[in-house]
Amino acid sequence: MLCLTVFLVIRSRMNTNEFKSKVLSLSDRLFPMVARMLGNNENAQDAVQVIMMKLWDKRKQLGKHPNVAGFVFLTARNYCLDELKKKTPEIENLELRIHFVESGKTVEEELEQKELNNLVRKVIETLPTQQREIIILRELDDLEFKEIAEITGLQVEYIRVLLSRARKTVSIELNKIYSYEQGKI
Image (cartoon, rainbow, N blue to C red):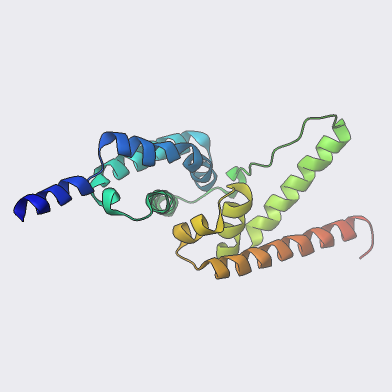
């Protein structure tokens, strides 16, 4: 019986290869979220390394965890929130990853797209905290509802409601801005 117990304890630990395949492989998906939360790429690179070291130290618990990816994202989110509590975040450094399609855009179209991106960023910054976090995780970090639920601890249905409200608010605010600019208000 003791041999079986020792075997189960040893087996539940995550070895180096399992850690590389299950945890380190997520660092590319983790980086954009961490960069967005911390405000710049250099801090994000350092943070991802620290997060991976913390996860390596917790590899015993990771071997037993039913959802390793969720645990990794939750650990990263909590680390970033702790770092942000230590210092005042600079909202101006919030970098949204909205990519331009370079196919045949004129200078005017590109400027309009940049202006729209800035307006969307400003509107997103005014959203309530949970709505802002959900819309960024879903639309910018491209995470699935299940992954967002694991990170935030919220139910998928509630996440859908928050995302819907956030999208509606962004739409309403953009309509107000464009209506005002066109002299309709």
